[in-house]
Length: 86
Image (tube, rainbow, N blue to C red; front, side):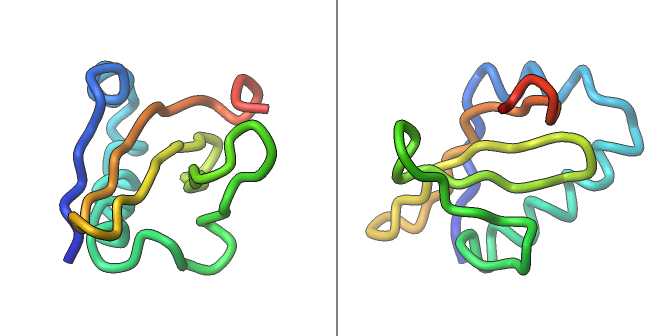
């Protein structure tokens, strides 16, 4: 099991979400705790400037995170709408 750690920015963004999105995020956290690298098309490894990071697709939102395999931690960096993320 991995430990999910939220950045201050991501925590703030999470509190501003609608309740329906928060329910999706609770499911996302459970998945990240089990397997942060593989979950169908929802998780994607980023390339180029953001190499080493991953993004998780949650509806119209994108969650960007990094994985530390040695310490079994997932660092949630930011939450952005799809239109702002790319």
